[in-house]
Image: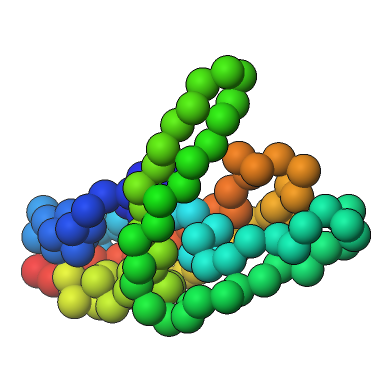
Length: 126
């Protein structure tokens, strides 16, 4: 659950492809791109409020998020990356994607809740 937070993650994926033996597996989990694509509408509708995407789903962009929790203020710099950015990096590194699993429903009441996405890939290079 950290690949989405690594700047230059494509080099990390390339290195994994380089060191894995043929038919070796690389299983990774990232937060679903939905987590950075948009936000839920204001709480006027409670748990049934719609999810709103105001900017392009398909373009990478840097996001700055500020949060307060238990008296601590935090600033996060992250990047929205559509799923294709990850799949392209895996394919370029010589991986075959065998399975993509979307897991769970978001907890709309918990702003820290993140939807995970699991990718199971197999190395094809010798």
